[in-house]
Length: 270
Ligand code: BGC
Image (cartoon, rainbow, N blue to C red; front, side, top):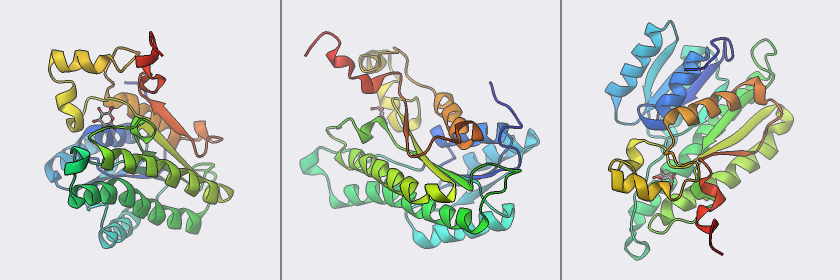
């Protein structure tokens, strides 16, 4: 595991949806890089606490905090508690997200709304609360050259259309425009807002796409690198975007997808 415990020393981070998958790995890597981490979860209290215990056992600082990212009152409460605990916040990882897949004509309004409210509205609510604190506090040069960093976890489906997943792809397309607009608005305040767009990463959300040899073989046709990604691939990118090593990077989407967005179907066609 490659990380530098001084890279994010003294920084305070909040990771949404950190009890499993990509969020969990990002929280772990931020902690290994020296940040104190608020581990947000929705329902998996035990997994969140396990991660907190692991971070603390390695002399890190962390606590678990429950909230549904789509609920404004819960997000306000989560930020107040985080500020109470940590004093301030430097890094927000907007990660919580879900899929509710359905053929388009059968998609219920409930399926549409839930995905939009968690994946997109949830990121809006958390980004807004984080930005308020970044603006209030401003730059602390001994901590970071930015007043704050927001990293939105998007998906290759912010640009790749996805049949059977119209709600999910729409939420991710929305994240891109939201991220860029916030970045444009807050850049003069030394706040950096970027996205990571993972491709197929081995997590519970897409287990059926890689957990049998047949499924994996089919999936690999979409990945020029011929490897399904690991959560660490995303965590390492998140640490870089959260650190001053990426100080001049603002408003980008970093695709971490083994080349999925190279449209490999065109390699010998078109
Ligand atoms: C989805 C996964 C999918 C991947 C590549 C992700 O955003 O959550 O289910 O495997 O995109 O299609």
